Length: 122
Length: 112
Image (cartoon, rainbow over all chains, first blue to last red):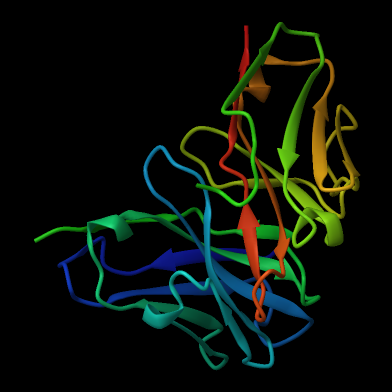
């Protein structure tokens, strides 16, 4: 059974970089055909897709966040990471990591982490 | 403003049926598969329907999905109080060259 777990600071100052890591257990992040993704949800609001990384290392990002987002993978640690630069209060949200079926137009997220709240405040 | 449009809320009595709509365009729903997610309070979303109308293992057949043109619908029959949750549709949007996943704004289901 695949499990995902987010980790990282719960408080980030404005203008700084938000950094989160998702640790995958129960399977190798580099095996199979999957997209490893980040999705966020501001309090009381809907889901916003941030971006994804394929097992090959190729990435896709939400156009509205692309200039500030980097997603990377560390296969040796079975982890993938999110960096979001120049954060503002609008980036305050619960951040989820999730796994999607590995075809290019996939929106099938079958495994999710429990989510981690990141607050942007001085 | 979400790319996919869902009603903010729906309600029905226990045992009844409810449908939740998700409206998009040719760049998203019209040419891609739709997924549906259930989010119980304080928890991560859970995959309910994928590829328009398929249910993952463990999802009861009370939940169904359909798609027609640029709209999709989630149906829930035999409503239970445990079905009270937020429901989201999702799909791929190819309006920009790289493409990206988009979600609806979510629909809050109340079981009266």
